[in-house]
Length: 406
Image (cartoon, one colour):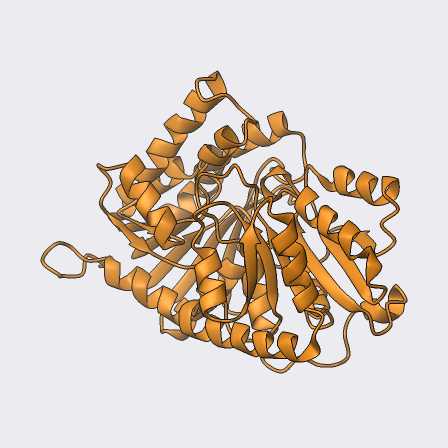
């Protein structure tokens, strides 16, 4: 079977978890005996498109405008144009290279034009990996109004996205329940957790030795890596860091980019948080290296979320056998998944006392080791990339159970 994967961010340039996840998915399809091509935008290339191999995966990059780390109006225009630019640049190649299955990833919500075009010329089924309910979360957080022009524009593209999918994989039981209630006419859904591949033993020769470079010695490093934005409620972790100043061996390391990077930077300076270090985004190789040098993996979600996101960063923590410390919005079943697996401790966003209590319990080395081991076991049992591929392929059937793949 020939599989086409569409994603807006991909290795080796990607510094996002999504790029790494989709590469691992592509490799698993390959290891399962399928041929794989990835279509992804690239604002840096001069040609209309290029086709190169990465770990035996064919990567088709088309020229596009920037959609990462640019002002929001520019990002919006360039995202809206993604499908148009892809079909314009790749139409000849796509017409002469049909695939049996189309797998596409959201965010972004602007892939429906490309997917519908491919379905029309190939007569192939499509599977949407839906990781983010946009624009719902920006409405919930008051970033745009529910009845604003932007909300109606985004809702239009959201509906087109769902209509272009023959099946939709949703990342948690609570999200699946929310989606079914919100979109009762859409029944082609299934639970599809985030995924990651188990890591081999990692070399002790790290590309960057953060303990040496930043003079951290034998400190207990609480690490947050990824998007530093409104949806993550970074203030939650900064309050924790301030309360942990009384523990001289504790060090907080924040790494990433986003619209609250300056807020974190200013808070660290204004409150004299001497136990905090803030770094910009790094490559996936360096990021993976850092994961093997830290002690506790952090995540946080904004309390106003009505949907129930599973942050991709927790997969990296599980891969590296790191205990997880986090805070989630009310009703998010990620709390149950992590705590029932004894892989970490999760509080409700805004409950600073419980988050602090959980953090203090992580200072015990034996406690950290036990949870870290359980985190790796949880990855293998619940977030396996092999299971992900099996679920995607198995759902591509008609009502009589006959495969609709060519």
